[in-house]
Length: 119
Image 1 (cartoon, rainbow, N blue to C red):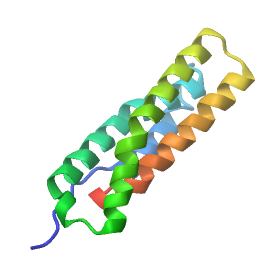
Image 2 (cartoon, one colour; image 1 turned 45 degrees about the horizontal axis):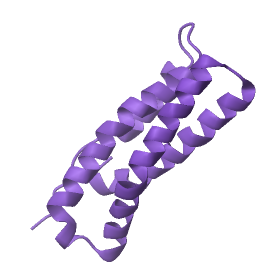
Image 3 (tube, rainbow, N blue to C red; image 1 turned 45 degrees about the vertical axis):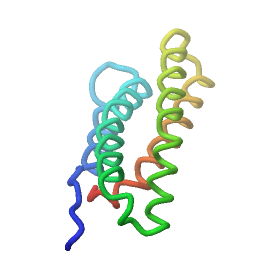
């Protein structure tokens, strides 16, 4: 039986979020972080749906990747959200750097699982 894959256009979402961050009068740090916070939830939900339905069929390496996302995504998402709220209240270069670091970490986590679900 051929492995069914979810089609999540993650690359398109990431490109779109980067493009949106430079359009308009909004703060690019806020726009990009909010886009990634929103879009990453879609990818996480698709990944976990796939994982829960297929975990007994996954190779050990694939299972380990999904489990790393399952365990680390919620905290990474919350850390980015909380840091973004603090940055919005007091926009500093250090705050922007912290948001960007957490943003990169969350994107890397999502990217690790996207190819496994067809993204």
